[in-house]
Image (tube, rainbow, N blue to C red):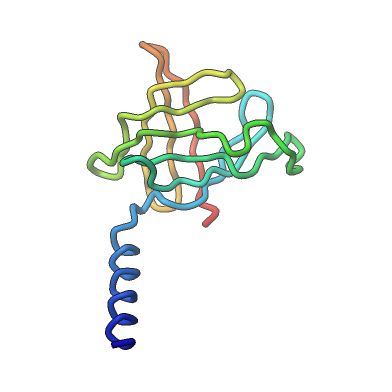
Length: 130
């Protein structure tokens, strides 16, 4: 009985890993208008894909306790085709602005863009940390 339960648990674990979206992980952002950057953990949440700021760095590259640590920077994203994601929002702390977001995954890089009406902002190309 124990062997059966262990085998079932292992199968569930392997199946869960196989279903994980390739965008999941920790991503390093580019510096914002103030020279600050961060690390965003992207994972599943509420039926979509979300990204939470887990670390922040000042313009000198020193880690600091940003008031945005723990804040959602990406939410409600849905996978589209060809490594693209959309339908969600991206928050930019340097401008205190929320944008309609678009993401494009290409291996270990993630291109981020956000738009408000017809004004779009390039969020740069993030790199995978893990």
